[in-house]
Image (cartoon, rainbow, N blue to C red):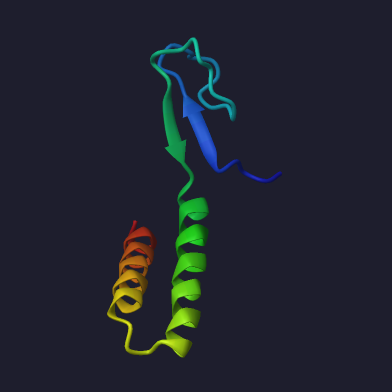
Length: 79
């Protein structure tokens, strides 16, 4: 079974604590993003900026964005 990227948790439902589709009628519902889904996305973005730097090694914007994604990856890995 593949885990969903998002979980929706309601404070009103006690017998079911998670489900994968939002309930528009539940005002107590909270959306959570799965850590691994966010980590995979951040790694893809990091690698994308890493590839861009091959053609433009002096582009400070790419370096900054690449480093920001690396910081996000490091933080997620430490959690």
